[in-house]
Length: 362
Image (tube, rainbow, N blue to C red; front, side, top):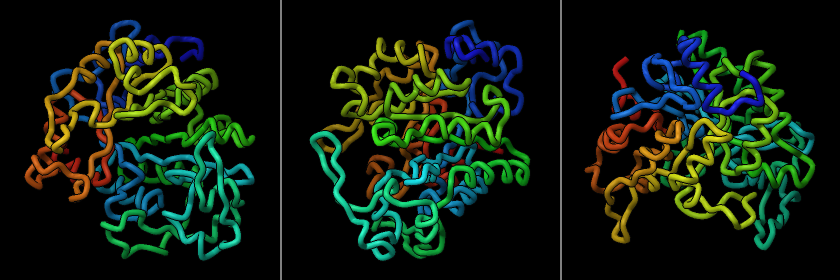
């Protein structure tokens, strides 16, 4: 897979020539059918089983981004685990949802003097941040549940893993389970980290190559809410890329000229296909919610993305009450089945076991 090839062309040839071997099942594209030149094979009519991506691990059951959460997710049937990637003061990639640490660790008790104010353009945030701690300091922290509505029984039991430790877990669990387990890292705030001379991209590619010699054939997808970050990664390695799309706002590196709404348009999706292999869409871009909180008819985003040759993964599926639409009647499976019927290619879930029960018969 040449770095200069168009993403769709490269993946299309990959599917046709190798049929994705076991990885075909993981990516849940058409059943080893050759893709047309210049496109990613995509599911249609909801016939293929969407892949299950463990959102921050099995984060409905364990503190997010811990090895315990990732391992539980795999045992519950996840095809991919999703480590969000940030970087320490001494340049080590670790798994945290964001670079602010006080919501998910005991950093305030461990390092009270490191509380600081960070400025991001016209915005500011006060707290404790990963880029102010070395890996040795981070090793002293213990993870805790972020959401007050979820169990805190495991608070303080797990440490903060490095990305290398997460990747080693994926390979170990692939061997133990006999399944191809994929990794789906997200680069968090990449333009910010690059601005403070702690770029993520080079270290991410180096870490992936330490565990997979051929990234073109590895069960790896890399995602980002930013655009230039993905284009930079594309120039560095033959890794499959996913453009994340929120229901509102704009990429941090867009400079005010591009919004997620424009990226999610038919024309915007065709533009994404020039540098990425798929989109990770907020589920409200697929099935919106009205002012009264009731679900509205589906949009054309899935069909438009597939027409552009992109796979579509949707986030985030959560089974607990604060996040669950009343119209599903308390049945998580109803939500998964509704989205699967639209032909989506994957789901990001905090509860991989619920996703597996609804979507899969292994």
